[in-house]
Length: 168
Image (cartoon, rainbow, N blue to C red; front, side, top):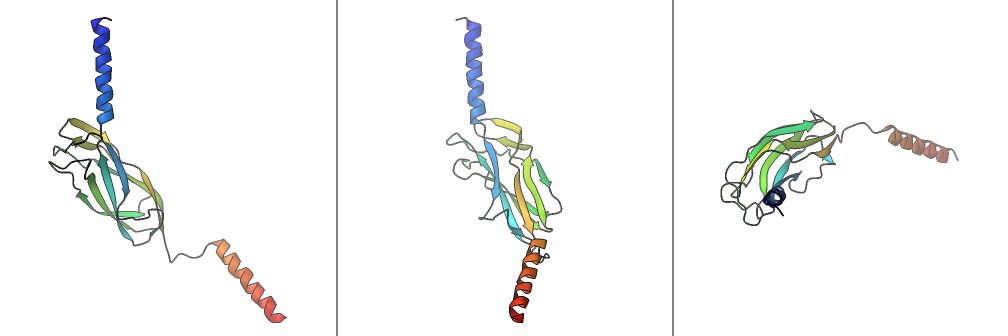
């Protein structure tokens, strides 16, 4: 086995370890919110988590917000963005919160939310930017909306039934 072959094999193994060690961003509803059954006017939070797979890996203070992405506007209104628990000395594997987004559902409809371009540094290395956390879908419903045609048809059938019973 030549030196060149051994060096290439070692470089590939090291790059595989670095790729495996890269943290992953996950976005989820905070506080048990059901994103498929949001109501018009409801305020809620979405949390972006960072999952590092190396025990004891801590943030080095270089996390960035990157860009917020959404579709289905104006279904949601972003009212606040706050940095979560990631700070210098916080263990990612113990307390993985990264960002918290506060939303208000302002119109009925469906869409998705996510983040892109997050920059992550840790006690192990600078992971760079380009991390994405989403997207996750949501549905906003309007409790005051008019009933669907099928519901109106059922009500009509019930009224016809009541009318026929009354005539007997």
